[in-house]
Amino acid sequence: MRIGITLGDPNGIGPEIAIKAARHFARHGKIKPLLVGDGFVIEDTANRLGLDATPAFIDVPGLDPAGYAPGQLDPRAGKATVAYAEAAVRLAREGRIDAIVGCPHSETAVNRAGIAFSGYPSLIANLTGTPRGQSFMMLTANGLRITHATLHESVSQALAHLSPDLVVAAGRATVTTARQLGIAAPRLGVFGINPHAGEDGLFGDEDERITKPAVARLKAEGIAADGPVGADLLLCQRQHDFYLAMFHDQGHIPIKLISPLRASALTIGVPVLFASVAHGCAFDIAGKGMADATGVIETLALLAGAYL
Image (tube, rainbow, N blue to C red; front, side):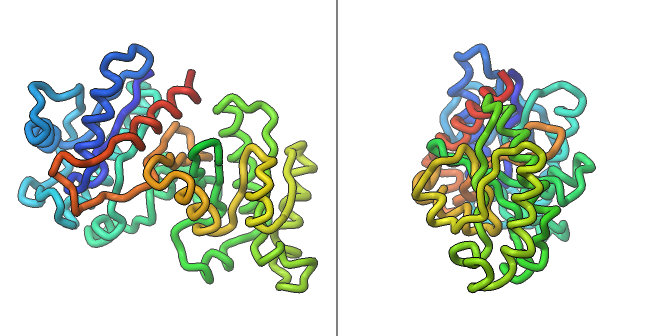
């Protein structure tokens, strides 16, 4: 399987962990990594790591060399992050790679470059012409898999954004991804919006208007969906294959508690197989050879399992 690894923010740890992950799989025939990014960044990082040779790569001239400064937040690096992702998506749609792993990005750097950006899911949706309401993030670690109906927006904006249609779309995308991962008939647990899923309107009517109708529709489509139930109760029971969170922190907190640096973030509902790691650029250690590539390695293995 051919997997493109984009460098993410070239001033962060992305180039280092991309190279380390590619070298990890160099001896394994099933996964053939291909780095996607500025060749001069890849070569400089390989030199910093004391390597005699660089892994295979596609040179994508995205970064002004004057903006290359490991450890520094720079809008030129943010612009390059997007250029690498664009190139990888083109490669995937041309059939030259089978899947993509994106290394950590800096939302601040990208937005300072004048590019509206709230994370990889929305970017990949835009690059593939996928309507925003059909693309979602699924975090996975240690057997826990949580799709997010909303993601990088304020809680008030997310609440205004939530609707039965959005929750149903997230549920459908989750089931499709489950089948890609080899789970033919997944059980889906749907988190409530309010504490205790509102207790029949006692703690707000949002679940009565949004999550309850959505779950009813998913069941009518033959999907084994339960809920809405309070996230705390569903997670302590752990009786479902996948979970559907309504807000960013509902899903991110439990995943990062059980696996701080080793979670994978799948972008689902799009026509390319794309995932990223669930940690940041770590500017404080960028360029120092100290970064742990485990997250990228496990994400590559996750995508290979889905494809194979």
